[in-house]
Image (cartoon, rainbow, N blue to C red; front, side, top):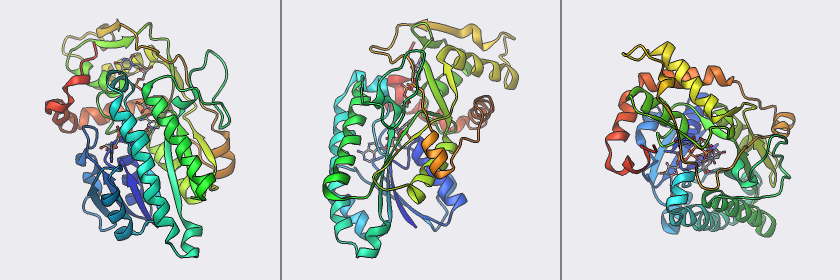
Length: 350
Ligand code: NAD
Ligand code: DAU
């Protein structure tokens, strides 16, 4: 298959592309604007493959997207391009509206025009797969899980923009007959995670001897999924999922933020003890809470398990250890980000 991956230079997109090049025969075209979060260094492992191509373009640019579609002739569009960081959306929502809503609309229009011009047999095989988040469902208290039928209740500019994009994608499916798939996934972690997000931020600040900022009292809960498990889930959905259907994806690994931070500190204490001999956990600092901070996310992933046979393969403790090892062994990757001027705004949250 030929798969066009928007946002393929980002954290999850690059994991998907590395997975497709190493574990399948699919051909991939990455279409990515290369914002602050898009890094060609995350695609170095596939850059020598003759099944991989790259195009720098904005999903909101109809000319560039139309050209990529007619040149590459994909059977699948896997749409991951987005502004993805909740704190940035609070500080400046404009880019989130532009890329996540207007950009998705523009991409849908191009995809529909392309789809309508395909021969009938190729139309039957075509899929537009929209990659979304569990944050569209809002916030849970101690009990309950998000299912595919949980009503939408987004509460941050980021999640509201993703919810809008989910609705647009489904509307293009219902109204115009575009064969769409939607996945809503929980928090990912693993290699190549941009260091503004909790897990890499804590690893890097710990190694730098800085404070480790935990928002509020650290009791907020996220359901963590190793990014390579998400890549396998996405492939299962666009290869075998039923058009028009939504699949929730989760790690079955709910953890309080404070416990995540302590787990990272414990892994670092084992793998790279601080020169002072003290535990990294002594650097933990409770800081002002995120405005509107959702208390708990948790996913019921039984549909994708029962229909497509997908399950996470990485337990949280193993995934955290593998992630900490990756950041210890790939300092050049993250140091280049820290050195870049554009990244300075959100790396010192304390
Ligand atoms: P990311 O921020 O790491 O990467 C986003 C990528 O999109 C970057 O390569 C960036 O350059 C590109 N991009 C941004 N605006 C663009 C535009 N206008 N045109 C073309 N490319 C553009 O994000 P991520 O964490 O890899 O998330 C990927 C997708 O998965 C997003 O849609 C996000 O909402 C969703 N998601 C993320 C998580 C998570 O835990 N990270 C969980 C569930 C769903
Ligand atoms: O649930 C899926 C979502 O997970 C994705 O849709 C988003 O794109 C992705 O960024 C992620 O959103 P979160 O807001 O949950 O991730 P983040 O890493 O920013 O924060 C995780 C938790 O840790 C959250 O409860 C806020 C808290 N936190 C975060 C940072 C950056 C802290 O306590 N301290 C911090 O410095």
